Length: 598
Image (tube, rainbow, N blue to C red):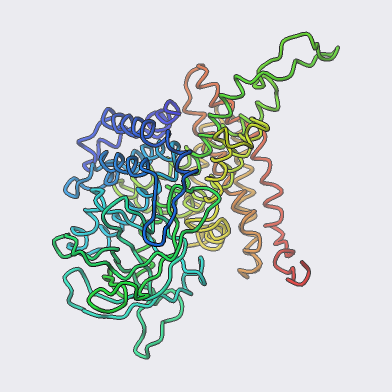
């Protein structure tokens, strides 16, 4: 994997050139590589050996405390001590001022070694980054900087049992208590939050919850819709303005742990706010400090969505990558079957490794095209984040990110899950047992289509907003980038693939127009997921073609990249026709199907 990562970063994306920018001027290609070396070592020593342990000894709650294996404490401590929690932050915030693309590349090693053990850090970094952007100076100093230092960990508390992904329906309530509190306007929160990853543990001395809640209007009623949503800092243990624990427990209670198919090493919690088990200040109600202005909660929360969704997509890629490497190693060593000749099989001849069978090579090539293409996608999007933050054409970077982020989250969640399924298939019966790692990787992977916006929600976002916003500006920006690659490729041996990609791009554009031709969202969006599948495959074909053009020699490594690119064009890109057909004709079946017919 490291050779592929270095190639994508430095030969394809030219990440070394970022050091010419003021923000990254103290770095070099050598310091970037040193960061990757450190991450790779910690992941190998502290995360990978305990991935199975975190799965089999999943968190348990005795009614008072959450118990986790000691390895979880050790791994997260090692990560915090590496400085990666604040990798992209300013030097004066304790950060390293790394580019996003290097930060993501470093985190890839942890996701590959144990995505569940790495979940605590990802949440904490995102929580603290949000506070750096939207918090007051004291909120940044007290909460964010202590999270970056690894003293405290953080969460995001959005979903509720009755609301799920429909955040406009949340009912957690925030009543003003003290407008003049030093840590921010102080409120008392009551309500329930569900599916809170990292919601309770004793890895760190405190947990900083970022909680979405509604402030009631003058009539005492909660405001309907998303406009009434505000954001609050709700620590598990109360702190003062000097970031010292006061010793008083906030009214946040663990109601129970969710028992998951995979991803078991990260606690997943149902939290009760303000139930009265604890009484800070002598009365019930969880104390929370307002972040930003009332009603701006979702806007603040979505500040971290680009990096968060790239992070989820990257985690999906790396789970797929781990399965690919495991099944590749197995296929090289497992003898089974004999060559088929015109005269049949010679039973007296030695068995051959299963990697010599064409169908096994097909499955390995599929995995290679999914995981290496997915890695290119995530790193490309992370590179766009750096352009958005430090580049000259920020508008172009924003337009591209807008349309690519749903793909960055959803495409690896679907197709690297398929990669993990193929890894099980390569191992055969052994793959379906707990004696080999690929079954756990599949279970861990299955979450990615659900969290950070489900698969269907990403599809609605893509077709319902991103490709039509500002008169289709984001789609046009992407098409222009794709066209540039096509024009370069048309002069090379990749001309057939370039023409195939041009036709696919035209198909996507035509289907987009036909989907919206009636102007009725219900017509267009009934087939949003097939649209997203076709869109994602077209994006991946473009990236594979661009990557193939960056390969310059005839080494085995280079030939492998070319073979994976050819595979994607030969076996994957042709699938988009069936997907786009139902989109273009606005197939009404799923929309019109009545519940009584099932």
